[in-house]
Structure formats: C-alpha cells, structure tokens
Image 1 (tube, rainbow, N blue to C red):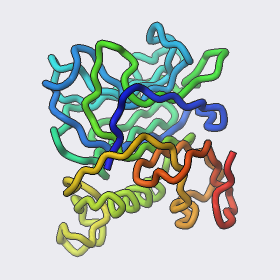
Image 2: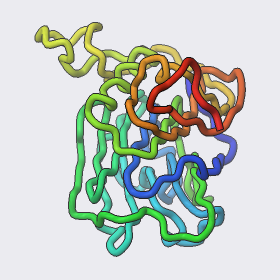
Image 3: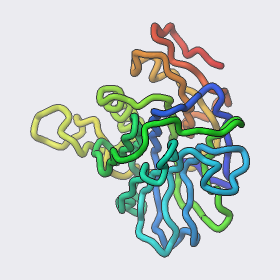
Length: 260
C-alpha cells in the first residue's frame, strides 16, 4: 500500500509547533536512482508557504537526483550553522520497503533505517529550527519541478518531540506488524531472527496503491505509546475513511484522540 503522487501536498503546521526537537517516521518503497530527475527530490519538507531558497525552510528529508548514489538525506536549519546539521547515507535499496526515522534532539541529528541507527551528527547548532514570521507548512512530495520523487509512501508520522528509545521501539513494533515486515533485530533475545522479532527489514509482498488521504488513527492512543502531551501529524494511506486535522495525545489519555 502506498501513495501515488500527482502533485505535492501541503499541511498547515500550526498545532504541531515544531521548535527544536522532532521525530519523523516514514514507511516508504523507493525505486532506483535512474528513475529520478536531475535534482534532489523531497520526501518531506518543513517550510514557508513559498519556497524560493534554502532560507525558506527549516528541515528537509530527501534523496539526490539520478546522477548521484541512492542516498537518504536529512538536513536541519538551526540558528547559526544549519549547514552542519546535515547527515546522509547511501542506503536506499530499490524496491525495498523500509521504515525510516529522522530524529533531532538538541544539536543532534540521527537517521535510522528500521531499528538501526545508520548516521548521526552532534556538531550542529542547538536552537530553533524556524526563524520566520509566517506559518510554516509540512510538504510531502517534490518541491523542485526538476525533481521526480520515484517512491511510494505508505505512512508518515511527524511528532514535535525527539522520541526516546522505548517510544521509538513501540512505534516501530506497531508499524512492522501493520506493514507485515520481517524482523532484522533479535528483539526477543532468543538468538533467532524470526517472526517473533518486532523490527522490520524486508519487502511487503503485495503493493496496492491508495488515494492520498490524511487519516488519524487511535492505535497509538490505545497502546499508550507516549506518556507526555505531544502533537502529531499522521498520514496513513491504509485507512481512507475520513480526512481530519492534527490531534494531541494527552498526558492522561481517555478513549479516542483529542482532535483539533
């Protein structure tokens, strides 16, 4: 299951309120670089309404054009030295479905593929990721008309906090079961990499495109994934029942999410 893009989508961020720390989790299936355009292509961009230069955005998750390796890239603009808040890794495997996490905590930026940290940097600047006066938006899909994002995006979760290890593990466990991905980490400690391990690394056996929809499910609410108030943007292509807005997971949750 995934998203077929006909054009980029934008979401108003107001209730998300990303200031410094954040976590983005993307379930995606990439295709080979030869199908890309000449320029970088964004999976997700947190930016002003109109982007004319790098000064107009706060962070970007993207891959390079067809003349470069199959790189997964993550860049954050913080006060003073946004060019240092930059990590990259050649780890895109064509036709593979994977869960990718992009995490910022203080001046640290981290990139995970499934449950494995594959790149990290702590030389960036601890500071606000925005210095604009207008409302920022979350964009999904290309921002450069010369770029062509050849990828199927199944699920995108944007959180206004840096998840700790337990919170991250809970989400990956849920997503790996939901997307029927096989284990790559011996999470149950039995010395076997088998179906009892929660973490993903493999292929979804069947691909069924869905129309692009914004859906906010309550699975995380039921599972008590978070123990502090947190705002979430959750794009889920597996359930096209309704289109909602942002919602907040409360500290002492009651049945069903509080929706804004």
